[in-house]
Length: 249
Image 1 (cartoon, rainbow, N blue to C red):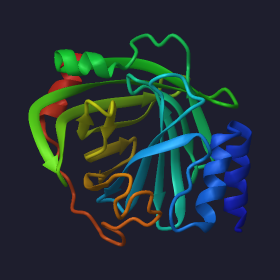
Image 2 (cartoon, one colour):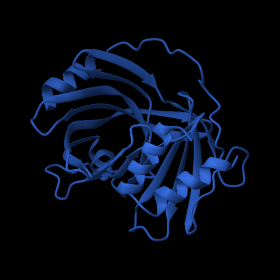
Image 3 (tube, rainbow, N blue to C red):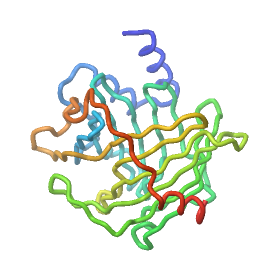
Image 4 (cartoon, rainbow, N blue to C red):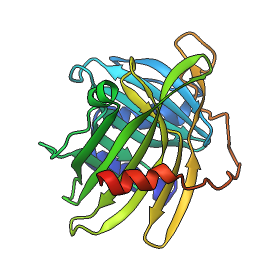
């Protein structure tokens, strides 16, 4: 194990015990992802960005909570917990070696219900690390009115815009793009996005390519199938992102 891997696991251990450690240990030696005891997977998603994601629920979690594990060719990159409104309850950034939790009483909680009912949801919330560093997220999701079918799964398409600020109120980054929503699964699936930091910007394409369900080939696979070693073309900045920025943020 490299020094970076040791530091990453130490950071995760300090931030979370239980599920996160079981997940990290189980994925290290298996070709099929091993869920912790009491957890049940319901879908594995292969993304265009050389990422495979596993979505599952666990008996010990509050009602409506679900977990997600992202993996690349080298192993786990991200672990998250969301609630029934798709709020970011806990996030473990494995490669960077830190974890965050949602602060209580958000100013404007993210609400998947509000998005589905009204076509638009704004949010303003704060997450904090174990050491007390906080980040404020301000943004919105909007249904485009379009539906897409990917590998037999129907999804609603969204536009989003989000900004992240540090404790001093300085902008850390902003991102705009398109995502997908599955109303019954109560979650967002990533799509194309542009992230802008003070001196640079970059694009990504995390569009889902394939869905595998329990009993099917590819369910709980630890190997991403699409986009590995690929270089993606640059995405254009779409006019509606500037309109969202000016009108709502």
